[in-house]
Length: 306
Ligand SMILES: Cc1cc2nc3c(=O)[nH]c(=O)nc-3n(C[C@H](O)[C@H](O)[C@H](O)COP(=O)(O)OP(=O)(O)OC[C@H]3O[C@@H](n4cnc5c(N)ncnc54)[C@H](O)[C@@H]3O)c2cc1C
Image (cartoon, rainbow, N blue to C red):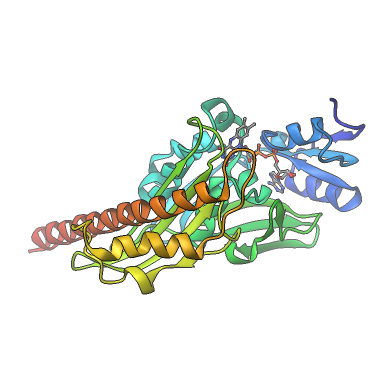
């Protein structure tokens, strides 16, 4: 099939793009990796396409411990994943982007586009929500920032107004003693996940303190699930601690799953149970190692200052 008739616009500035979007019924085109198939299958039929890829200065990636990582609207998955400063500042970004699709798609698809597309089977909405990030949007009325907790209204539905363009997204920097991890099961590497799990865990004294989890293709889209009541106090170095098994069972009961042509709900629940414990454990180990690195750095600093 071909897209239904539409008018193509290629603005040269974000202001021009906002002006067009304020005047017509249109869709923003970024990497086109989701939108073009949707147009071709006529799942979307906007009267106008506003292609923002001709706008200069919209692909920057900046990273600092104070402000976290900010990636602009045209930064591709591949460029965010390979940015060393971004990887140091918030390692979960790169870990998650390795799971997004295939290299050819990551070379064109944008991370901001993936976030505002709000697909419950995509990794980056789960990541920005877990990290409590935000998206900055612009329209003819000016700019505003949308916290990730207010961004996802439902499957493929974000809280951007129809005339707003996302200009960038930001996630906070990693903190010592807080670890993150993500893993998923897909039928083939690069396919959308049957179930994916991302976790943020705080640790101290070889024990888990808090554990927050978001899900891909399971649970309520956009929700952060707090498992601290089940897993706080669990030993990080002893996987036989009964709390880890209790975490699996808690996840199985708390997280709802749906069947589709790829997997039954029962199989997805089994993946939720197994992956939740595995990913929370990996995040806990990551948190413990960040603490060790931080303490070693403080030791070196104090030695230098003596
Ligand atoms: C075969 C295949 C496999 C894939 N597998 C995965 C996967 O495993 N995991 C995954 O997460 N994704 C996957 N994707 C999707 C891919 O990651 C897309 O790149 C991403 O979802 C959308 O980014 P984009 O830049 O291509 O956006 P586009 O396709 O250009 O746009 C997508 C939607 O977001 C809107 N939009 C985009 N940018 C903006 C903006 N700046 N402001 C306002 N609205 C905007 C568009 O209007 C449109 O509604 C896959 C895609 C394909 C084709």
